[in-house]
Structures are given as structure tokens and as C-alpha cells.
Image (cartoon, rainbow over all chains, first blue to last red; front, side, top):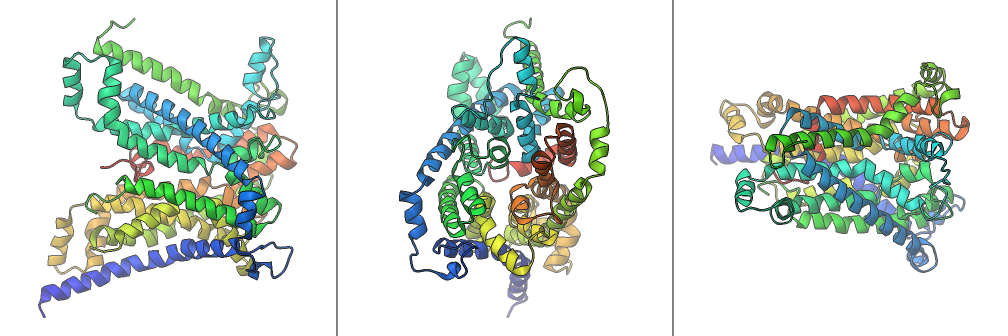
Length: 299
Length: 272
């Protein structure tokens, strides 16, 4: 046997040795819980009834109840409304700002960092900031309006405005992500393409629609998909601002699952909702993978 | 007025517009900051009376203990994730493994999965193992996303390092991991720092898991803030001060390491 083959085998063994611990731990904290979640979703598990976790007599009971006899479909509609609103606003704000900030200067560098702040703030702090802004007693916005003689009611307790308000706060928190991705793509565009379009006499609008947008479209698509998936998980804003209310006006799917599981202790039922959410997220992730992003250059 | 078509003029116009916009965007956060220095009586505006009372009153509450829990849980989870994830990321970036596409997908789904999906299994398992309301329990949960993060981002950092360097070390008789420690790792310090900080921020920012899996002993700072809201009769000054303390570490890290963070935050999004 040649020394080369021996070295290649030793090398492969060394790589596997480096990989194994991480994969074992990752499997223990992800695959294990996932299997447990699916199993639980097939039972009527609730802590107040001993043995309910092993009752597989109606395995699809939770799913049938969720789809046909509950407010789960309603929560999905609310979720879709919230996600479309917030992702739409984030995309507009993110692209607009990226175009504005795509100028080479020292000061712009500083500004770009400044715009990242909402995204890195702890989500609970973002929720507090918006709690302050939307509570008439302490909100500077309400004091300002009162100064003009206007006394609008609270937006948070109005079923019509509560969801758009959550979407607006979520947009404030997350537009920097889209901005960052689009900015990175804009800066990779070859200068010659821009020069050529300018020499051809393109105006700013033509420039955007025919030169810049086609170039940033792949990055923008991925940013939208990432944000779409993450918008499903919005929690602290709803928890602190509306607690799912008024009524059920902001009880989106994630919050519905939380309430059913941890307020009402329907663990089996909540697991079924969570399983369906994971399935939905998986399909969206697959779309990201299919687009060819997030893979190694050489994979 | 900038002249139309002049490039310098346009640049200045964009700088002014962006500066004004940034002030508007950050105003809500700045409002919370000034609120934390106001007396409870002047909290809703009016004459600004500066005080540190909100911060000193926090010192006498359970908040410092919660803050310490946050520090310990986030730091430990980050360290463990780096320790386990860095060798794995290197192996994935170098070894010609057949299943790496599957592994990459698995890591991506872990990053994407809604936390609610993990809470029921973890809650049940932790009740059984006695890990409810312990910092160790939180570390285990934070590993789910930190480990995925480390593998995901460090893989792309390692992929950018030329193979010829460690091959030279192999020829000199170093083993795979010897060459890794002596040649590759020193070159990846910026990537390691950025990844570590991202993991710390993700763990530090967690609210959902800590809300469900802790009670009093292991309560983290974000959950402690919410408790001020519910039981302390809306002490806005205290809430604002606690909020500022929780956001400070994250803000400091971000401003100090912006360049590297941007790469991690957009990891998997922009093709390089």
C-alpha cells in the first residue's frame, strides 16, 4: 500500500473525528426534540391527565381539530396578513435605503452602521421601546398630538390598528436586514455596467428598473424569504404590546401555538400546530436552498 | 442647493437625507435612553430632571442576578458552540464528504425552525431531567442555534483560506489537526471573533426560551424586564434603565466589530 493512500485515509479519519462531536450534539438537540415533537403531536398530551402522552388511539385527532374545529385557520390568515404587511414594508424601506446609502464616503460608512442598530437590539428592548411609544400615558408621540389638541385612542387596543401596528414595529426592527443584503449586492455590481447605462442616457428610474434591480434580484429574493420565515416567529412584540389581543386580533399562528401550549396546557395539540409550522418553514427553506444560495462555492 | 447632475452635490444631498432619516429611525431608541435618566414624576416628558435613581434602584432588586444569569448562559453556550462547531466547520470545508449538502440543509433548517417547536420537547425533557429553571438547561437550548450558526459561518471563513498553506504543514509532518491549530486557526481569528460575538448576541437576545424554561433561579435579564412590567406597577424608569443595560453589551459589540458582523448576519444570503 502506498504512503499516499495511507495518508488520505488518516486524513479522512481525522476529518470525521472533528465532525462527529458537533453532529452528535446537534442531533441530540435538534433531531431528538423534533422526533419527540412529532410523536407528541399524535397524542392528546396534557399535564393534568397522566398517561395522555402515550395515548396514540387517535393519532390525527389534533390535526383534524386544528384544521376543522378551531381558530387555527384564522390564525394562519392573520399570520399571512402580518407577514405580507411587514415583509412588504421591510422590502420597500430596505431597498430604498440601500439605494440611498450606496455612496462611497466615510460618513456613509458611519450612517450604515447606525441603521443596523434596530436589528441588533434585543427583541425585548424593541418591544419595550414600542410599548412606550404606544402607551398614551408616557408616549412622546401622544404628548405631541395632545399639544395640537388631538387625543386619539390607543392603537394597540383597537382591533383594526393592532395588527398593522405590530407590522410597523416589526418593520422598524428588521428593515436593516434587507438593507444590508441589498447594499452588499449593489456594491458588487460592476461599475462598467452603471457607466454604460449612464452613457446611453438612462434616467434614474430606468437605471433602477433595468440596471440595478435585475442585478440585486437574487439577493433580494433570498432576503425576502429569510424575512418571511423570521416574520412567522415574531414573539416579544406581540407578547408585550397586545398579548394576542384585542380579542384575538393579533393571535397569529406562533402566538396561537404558544397560548394553546403554555396557557391552556394542551401540549399535544400545541405540538401538532408546531409540527405544521416546522413543515411550512422547511418548505420555505428548501426554496432558499433551491435558489442555490447559502451553499459552498465549490459544493 | 446642490447643482443638478453634479456628482459631489448628489453625494452631499444623499448624505444629508440619510443623516436626517437615521435620526428619525433611532429616535424611539434614544427616547428610551433619556427616559432611563428621568425621575418617575417627570417620566412622560416635561422638564428633564437627570437622575441615576432608576439604575441604583435596579441594583437593590433581583435584576443583577438575572443579568449575571444572562452573561453566564450566553458565554458558556458560545464557548461550547465554538469548541464543538469550529473543528466540524473545518472538516466540512476540507474533507470531500458526500453528505455535506444534507448537513448544510440540516443546519439551515435548524436556523429557521420556529422556537415553539423546540419548547415542548425541551420542557418535557427538562422536567424529567431536573433542568427546568437552571442555567445549564438554557445553555443546552442555546446550543441548538449557536452550533448551527458556528458551523454555517465558520465553514465559509475556512473555505476562503487557501489549502496550500496547510498542505505545506502536512508535508513538514504535521497531522491534520496539528496543521489546523498552527496554520489555519491563527488566520481565522477575525472570523472566530465575529462568529463568537454573533452567537453571544443570539443567546443574549433570547426571550422566548428563557420565558418558558426558567422561573426565578435562572431567570435571564430580558425576562426580568417583563416582570417589572407585570408586578411592579409600571415602573417606567426602572424598565427603561433595565432595557438600556440589556442593550448595551449588544450595541458595544456591534459597533466595535461591524465589518465582521455584517458578513455573519448575511451568511447564506449573499453569494460570494
